Length: 177
Image (cartoon, rainbow, N blue to C red; front, top):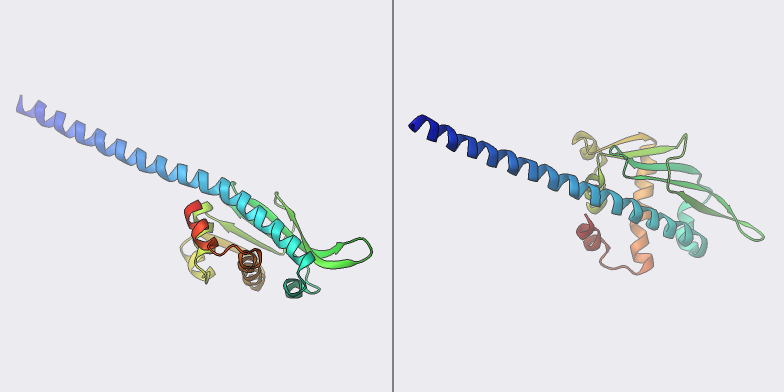
């Protein structure tokens, strides 16, 4: 009789542990799902703003004078897939240095950054001083192509909130993820 009570107690503990582990896994999946979808849209909007800022802000545009490159930013879980193409943009009577944004992965990019998931991208962007090597060692991101281009891109990305007057961008992004 005592043995059956002991077995029943262990069974309940095991069930409780399994339920708690499943809840933790579900919580992580939900966070990644929300973060991945929201960040894909946020990144796309930031890049659209970047492209417009290049056209209207001469000082900002100086950062890409005669610069041509293609960036792909994606995630292993396929929830983030954005491309930025730096090139001359046709205007009415002239061309200016600028950028085109696509909400898909383009072929043959100059630099590709692949994040583990949306949370990894948030952590990288929020660091203020992104450490690519640490991210690669922690298996949070991988980079192919010109690593210097990645640093240039992150620099340009971090100028956007200030240029748009979004003073608490880092905190807003932290709440997003």
